[in-house]
Image 1 (cartoon, helix red, strand yellow):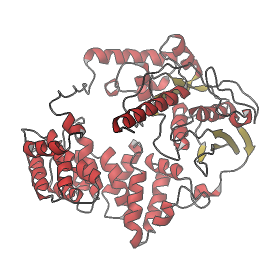
Image 2 (image 1 turned 30 degrees about the vertical axis):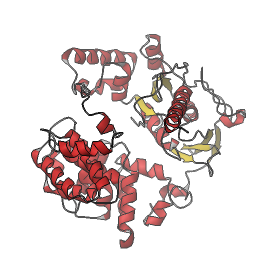
Image 3 (image 1 turned 90 degrees about the vertical axis):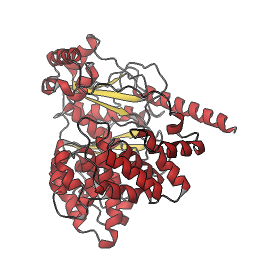
Length: 488
């Protein structure tokens, strides 16, 4: 799940099912009970339809210079949309990986560092698929290249296991990949990777570098490895830091080491950093961790829920491994089967990448929307609306989305998806669920199965707008508290 915060105001949700009528092209798309109309002008909430091909830029090469990559968001003429390409690469699609390879091969030597860094950042928050892991695992075994440098951090964080350690710890692997590899295994399921001198060299570069956040991250990676060699390396590196502020930042990691290592350094640093969350949390009991694998009784409940949902018509739940489901609730099982998507309505970015959300939700009803290409056209200024576009079956579908800052207009997203389902005469539908916070779960699947789940009260409908309203109210409350503390 994409998430920016883990705690928010509780809220009440208004029921609302996505539209199910079949208006002609250009007519208003019904949003369902409780749904919001984003614009005062009724025409703004319509889905227009016209004949037209997929623009040629979708077949164009990817940027091969750092300058073109930097300006990609604004360049709608020469390149495919940036999120369209990024999502295709993150999906592991062979065609997109091949296009990225061709682009990487053409990067000028002077641009390699900046080009790879930008791609590392662009792919950092994508959700890796098995296909992506398979493709990048092969690339990880290749000789050093611009492509390998760009992909290794994502591979190390999301795909690499013990068998991949030799590739990850190679001298020519980017330091970001080494840190990501160890960090992704700390506190996770399975054994932690063994400490390597390569990790100490990487941590030294981070702690002596310019970025304080990366320095702190490297220190915590060493501490949370809970291996004597890693703890000793942290103590050595801390002693080498000459900047007092940086040394105190790194010392925070001693709160995570075993056997009291580095406690004098930690206490001294906390005397100067009384508001650091690490220091304020000293002495408090640790939060108990939930079991990684369901207990036998819970496992039986998961199996029963799978059988129940499969009988209702959610066919893919029969393929779910019960031991990999986080709980026996309906939402967890549907999410594991690819019928539900849980996401944060606040994106934390601009533009919001509505097209990525459209692709994720379209996958819920596969194959009903297979082959549809989505695009987000962001406003040229901070105030204007977005335009959401879908290319399908020789037609172009457009609808406007409200510019809500760094929040999705989920109503517009569902409006466009519903129009596509109607155009293809699909029996699939979408339903937004009540989560009680700033996140949202959208279920997509057979209408008959969704209706049956509603009748049996296995699903609770919600209004997408409520998550945004509650989130913004909470932001206002936090800002007021901060101003009150600062005396403004």
